[in-house]
Structures are given as C-alpha cells and as structure tokens.
Length: 489
Image 1 (cartoon, one colour):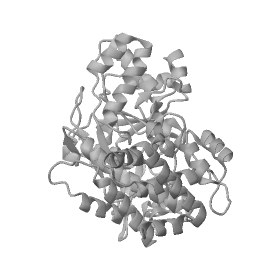
Image 2 (cartoon, rainbow, N blue to C red; image 1 turned 90 degrees about the vertical axis):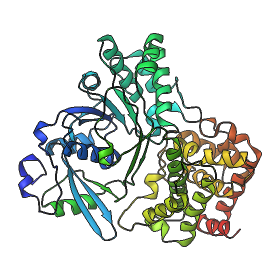
Image 3 (cartoon, helix red, strand yellow; image 1 turned 120 degrees about the horizontal axis):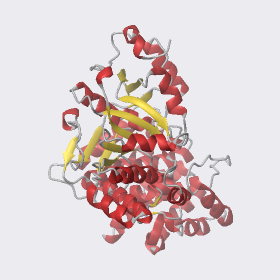
Image 4 (tube, rainbow, N blue to C red; image 1 turned 30 degrees about the vertical axis):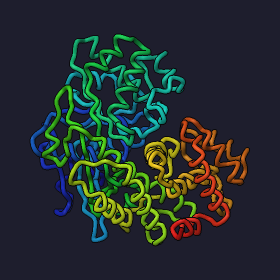
C-alpha cells in the first residue's frame, strides 16, 4: 500500500500528520529545486504555517532537470515523510505543504505559467551554488554559461533558475501584476543581494528597462538556513515504510535541529513565519557568515579529509578524536573573523555543531558533502582565510582543508582508486591535476591559479605557502596522519 490521501486512517497513531484540511489549501509559493533539503526545511515551516491557518500558502515544487522526485511523490498525492533521527530514536511526520510538482525541462512554459500566476507571491530556491550560473568569486552572472546563453536566445523556454525567474517576472510586468518575492535559501554570500544582482544583470541583457524594474520592484530577502539533511538511501525508505505500515517512495532524513533566519523584506506578503519558528531580522549577514564559516567550513574540512582517510559519513569521521578536534579548530579560527550581534554565544554554537556532526543516527556521507567544492570553497573557507590574512593571522588549519579539496579533486584516492568527483569544474581540475602530477609544489599552484575559485587570493604568497605545505603533508603522510600532525603543532 502506498502513502496517500486515501489511507491516512491506516497510519499508526504515533505518526504525526498534517493538522489542517489539505483540500482547502491553495498555492502561494513556487519552489525551484525540489530536493531533500527543501522538503526537510522550508516545506516543514510552511506546513506549520498551514496548520496555523495560512491556507493560501501551499507550495508548487519544481525540479529544473530530473523527474525523479515528481515521479516518486505524484502517485502519493505529494505527501511524504520527514524522519527526524536522534540517538534516542526517530520521529516520523507526514508533510502536506507540497501540493503539486513540475519538471521544468519537460515543459518550461508550464513552470513559467505557474510562476506568473498572481496567486504566487513567493518564489523560493534551493538550487545549490552552481544553479545560479554565476562566478562565486565576484557574485556576478556568468554571461558565457551555456544555460544563460540559451535562455537569452530562447526566453520563453528557459533552462536556468535565472532564466525562469526573469521570464515569469517579465510576464507579470507586461500584465501589470505585482512581482513576487525571490527568496534564496542557498549558501551564497549575502544571498539575497547576490541573487538580486544576478537576476538584474540577466534581465538587463534582455532589456535595460526590465532590469531596472526588477531592481526597483522585486524584493530579494537574504536568508540563513540550517539543517543537516543526508541523501535518502534505500535502507531509509525501507525503515520509514516499515514505521508507516505503507510505502513512501521518497521520504527525507534529518536531524532535530533546524534554523531559518530571514530578512523581513517581502513585496507581495508572506505567511506568519515567526509563528513557525523563523527568526525575522533586519540584517542576516552576521548569521549567514556564522553558519558558513563555522558549520559549513568545518563540514567541508571533515568531508574532504575524512573521505581521504576512509570514513564514509561525518558521524564516522567524528569518532576519530583528531578529526573532531580539527572541526573545532576550524570553528575557533573562523570565529575571530566574525562580528555578531550582542548576546551571540559562538562557543555554544560551535559546541552544538560538534554534537550534531557526531549524531550516530544521521548518515551524512562525506562524498555527498564534498560535491561542488569549487562553488563552495569561496564562501566556506576562502573568505575566512582572507580575513585572517588581513589580520596577519595564520591560516594553516583552513589551508589543510583546502589541500584536502585539492587532493580530492585529483580523482584518485590514497589507495589509488578512482573518486567520483561531482563538480562543475571537475574536468578542468582533473586536467590540471594530471599535468601537475602528485607533486605538491606543482599541483597546489596550478589549482590556486583557477580564478573562478580563488580569484586574487590565489596569488597571495602566504596562502600559497600554507596550502602547498599542507598538500605536501597529505601526499607524504596520508590524511589521517596529516590531521594528527597538524593538531600537534
């Protein structure tokens, strides 16, 4: 039996289900990037808003490319389970906020139609850093990106997130309709301002007037999102289906902790997010940097170095006391680059992160976190390194994490086996690695010269020395011993 509207009565009493009449819910949000993170984070918040009576804020989900999520959820009326895993047990909750889904690649016009509908007042995104077709070092639109080139030549059948958003906003402008708010939920530096710049630049390439209208009329609130959401494995599907007594084709696994900080700036209204636990603030940037430089930076350090050391998950990696100390050291050294609002306890936040990373019930694979590193490094590690260098502080701990990324993108692990590197620049990075060989003094400068990742920072002799030295230790000692050696110095 498959999860769906018709068999709610068959769910066990301990399963939490939507606390509202789903038949009365209408869509107010289109979400681009219908992946596990959105379904375990923003959709859960909206589910709480619907339970509080905000019936006009249901979600239409859009997958830009793959039909897999739609194909899994449509037969079960877009209901799915969030399994919240802690050491003491798992709580199961059925989410009803997702009303429908579309696959953009199959029918681009249909997605533009949904976004242009005046009932839609927010378009939110979790398309990962690479989905914005931008240059991470500058935050500007990459005008040579193949999807950008396509979308400018075929504005009615876009492929990219900027192409879809601008196409829908252009139609609403032409029809005299109020624009929707664009709500980025990805780990971009100053994500609202960055996405506004990308969208405005894209629109201006279509029409200067359109670019100006979007800059003036559309709200792009900045946000910070935080919840660890591993990929769903077949064993997870089996465990959730067993708990439900019926099949859920695509549940999501997550942890008890969740946080969403949002700049309170919307141009077409919003649900009562604060009542659902969202922190509405005037300035998100301190919280965003705190998360990027403490959580995400240490996560990346654990992912690259832990993977090289043979650990499959972050929790496995954290069982090694040297890696747990490495994560703490990354946070401690990044903390001095932050200026937080009064009352913020960075030490307590860091301690909570270490506990979350060590959660044995959460199987977050190092390989999954290692994806798209060329897009992630600037926000997670390089910004803090630049700030520490500006203060004449050492950067060796962060340099070891960057060296771990360099060793990883060579696509050969410490046992000589192939690494399945998933990265927009994977081909370019692998070619540089092949040309440089396994000599740190050649490989580190070659990769530091990739301007799309490192920009001018890659030319700093202090950074070059620290990264080259760390990479040399990785080749000479292996990741586990290199981490231990670093912590003893």
